[in-house]
Amino acid sequence: TKEEIEDAASKYGAVQKVKIDKKREGVAFVEFLEKNSAKLAAKRSIKIGRTICKTVHLKQLPDENPAPAATPASTKKNSTTTALVSSLPEDVTVEELKSLFEPCGEIVDIRVGKNASGRIAFVEMATKTGFKKVLKQKGKDVRGKKITTSAAKNAFDNKAGASGGGEQARPKPQDCKTIIVKNLPYYHGDSEEKIRNRIKRIFKVCGSVSAVRPFMTLERGDNAPDPTFKGLAFVEFSEPDAADAALKMNGRDNEGRPMKIDWSDNRDVAVRKKKKGKKGSK
Image (tube, rainbow, N blue to C red):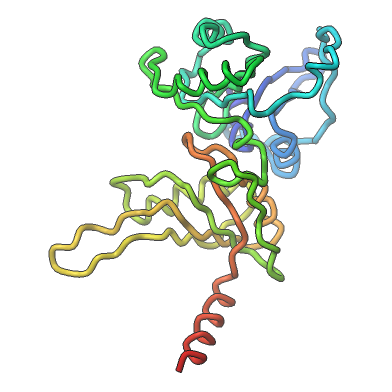
């Protein structure tokens, strides 16, 4: 079914549309909101139940009902007027979202999709004022679910940091297979092992994850509280190519928070640097 295909494909990124080919049995087209998601899905197989499906990356299919040509003033999209809305009900509709955000101002476009966290939508407003009003809807109840809102550029701009400031990544160290991830949720109440597994699931679409090292507070003493996660972790992959793919997730939304990802030294390199620093201080 379309729902099964969408669920299986969403682990690679937000899915905008699923179309089943009526002429060819066992063929379907999945349209992602991001090009990188489509490329990643094409490199890896999509598993539906016990069936492993072959994937191929195609160019974007022409719209069956193309919209009238945009005027020059509206041809260039302003990313600062598009909001990412997440934590939505699974069966939310465009009409429902239109009713919710119409009081904020003129709506240019609403695109509903899905990522690993659940149902999301991109709401493009005609003005910055309308965009800011949409952001202020954060926490609003939609059929029992409190929505989260953020600037959509944080979900797509690979150079955007946690603050959306367009921060550049450091140069990639030679044979680097390790990244540092900041601005992760604090996962209050979760054990360190559970946090490792959570982070591993985020990046398994990029390739084989060999180690996850979350940064935990550690207080000494008999009555010291349990270690708590500080929203930062080192993720090491088996291959450099997997780390390259992970860096492209910089700025992507994760449970309402844009991840800030940069290169980090491999563990053996970091240990050597630390030892060298100790010797130099003697």
